[in-house]
Image 1 (cartoon, rainbow, N blue to C red):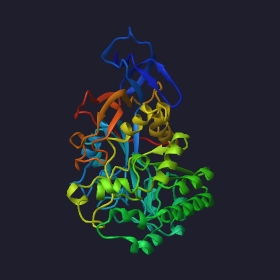
Image 2 (image 1 turned 135 degrees about the vertical axis):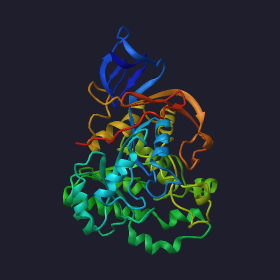
Image 3 (image 1 turned 45 degrees about the vertical axis):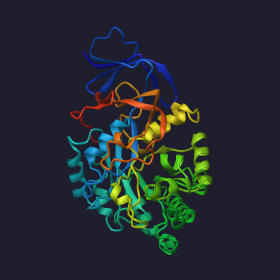
Image 4 (image 1 turned 60 degrees about the vertical axis):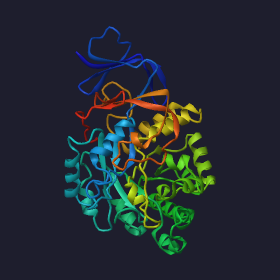
Length: 436
């Protein structure tokens, strides 16, 4: 007996669309094709809906342990599944930072039977914790090592590139980078203007990002190590990265693809503050041009929630970061509705490329034997992003009031409906992700 059949929908992958049914048994895809006469315990009628491989958000900060008043693993995962995200990679800049195997295993334990999506965690790199990095090499649920080259939220920092190359040589895991040059950030603090959030982009200017990314590419080429650079924001970095593809992949956030200075700072004030910052229209336009050309590897939200009262503090006492896991897919699907990108490109950016780049096992494809992680979307559904609909603990979105077309309507995790028809089944829990 089949557990679940999803019928009458259009199955979309990174390179195809076809009208077929999907049968699921024991959390796996077991049959594909016309399954009208196949008996099943449950059926979903997906007429006029599209089914894509479960979407990843490869960059979230769910704030646990240490800052659970802003978010925790449970509430962050509720926001994820409400946004059609089936799997997340969570960052290590917690309190304490996740820099030992013991702390890592404790965090994994916290996620069990609490997170409603599948999960993997980054391990935090420090100058002197290479022995600990080696210990997590084969731990299920570890997506890679995170290095903050420039200081951001939390205390993690490795700014010396000799130390960075030692880390590169120490592990087979993917290493992902927050790329801003610490020395230059410190030198440029004179550009911070109290009460002027727009000065954030002048302090953390293009050079702070470009210098760091150039050094990272050189270190990757020297060590022959595959690395991943997070939240790229500048035209100059994109041009540099596109010439240096051998060992380097990169991602961009939805906010850097849709917001620009000065307008977003005029409208949102400190709520637009993040690291690296939202930049001028020139950079927005070039990032969008790169998106249209299909040359961005991954879109990750950098979901970094802070409470409204924290964000309302006078700049620069206001914290950097904004939520985004629940709106990542709707923003990309709106680009499909506007015929700017294809639905296949959305699949590439959110499931196929993450699977390839991070060597994720049994996910990212709609294929017999693969995990039944599926995102069901209605490309015609139009509604506004509203703060009251956000599942995140912080309760706000920088996109509040924005009307978008194309929304996730169902999230299937390991063959179970965790989100369907605006309701979350809180009895469904995710599992740690396997990597090759």
